[in-house]
Length: 62
Image (tube, rainbow, N blue to C red):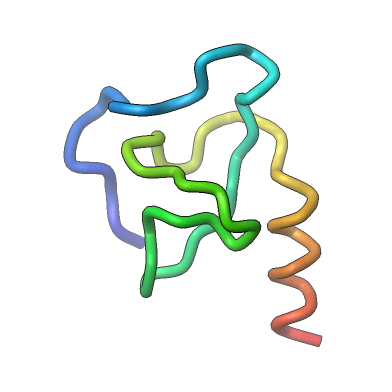
């Protein structure tokens, strides 16, 4: 899995309610499966997973 080039994010969450771990693919690491732009967000943050991303990931493997 690729790593973020810098430890700090450029355009990350602006409030605690936005701290959700979105799932991305290697083909487009700046866009979550749910469509959210996650450019500059940290990789694998210790936040709860986005339920939309999880559903979309599960449907890919079903």
